[in-house]
Amino acid sequence: MINRDNSPDAIKGMCILLMVFGHVSYIGSFTSSLYTVKAFIYTFHMPLFLILSGYFFSFNANIQNSALKILKRIALPYLIFIFLYLVGLILVQYLGIKTTNVAPKTISEFIRIIFLNPIGGYWFLHSLIVIQLSILFSRYVTARFSSDTKSIAIALLISIFILLIMTKFGVVTFRTVTYFILGIIVKQLYPDGFSFPFKLSLLLVVLFYLGNTFWLIDIYNLFSASEVIWCLLLTSFFWSLFIIFKDNYVTNLMAYLGRNTLIILVLHALFIVVMKPLNNLFLVLDATGIMQSLIVTVITLVLCLFSARVFDYLNITRFIFNVENIYSKQDRTG
Image 1: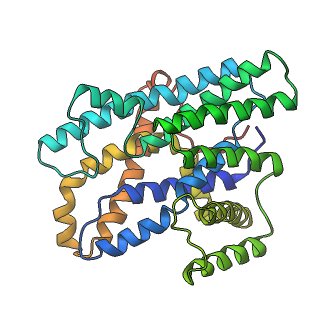
Image 2: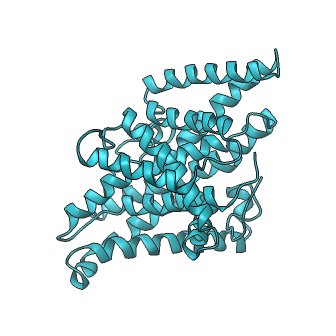
């Protein structure tokens, strides 16, 4: 994996912030407007995450060590926190608190959600686990015969075949697999960073959005050619943007969030659900609901980061995430 500048982390931070905002249950007179904003966010935020995940996925690392790392650092936290989330859903719905996701009604449904069809933001971690382990398995099979570039290409084709089968059973989606694979391809084409001259990137993004405005293309059409191009353009645009403003406070803040995405991914849903009883209070303060959506987003992020510090302080991070410290203030490269 190449040494990274702040840009990929800043993109991840921006996307995780937008993901949390998108998972808030909107209330108030501006609900329809907030859902319009959410619809626009959903045209790119998770695809960019997947593209970057594919970009920084390494074919050359030790296969067994990589698989073990995925199981310990992603799969274990995923299992722990989706279990807690589902238990929390059952509890709050029993108390009469409305939630976006429906709690499982049977043990079999509980197990099915965890292992096959996760809900909330947990689908992303589940997809990363499935996709990366599938690729590593294919690499393991082909590496027994050859270790050259050709075997890597064959491994990628085999893994795509395996993942396509999984899409038929709903374990992962074709859209998710494609964006991750696109990230791998982009890495091969642009190993030193996926950024173009900023003015060119800005021009292309503006032209593409104008094309959507005048109905020449449709970026809202799920997994269309327009959406794919739109997401690739935005990846390059934000990468270039954060390079230009690399010392800017906003860039540093987004990069800070980006280096703490795992803890935000696994915990944010719990805090959003916990704050739902405060909705009536938010409406008294602001009938539009804008304050509620923004405050819940900010508080959720702060509580996730605070929880990371608590995990580290109590010395339990290594048991949950298999690292000494999950909270990160420093740039992580490599």
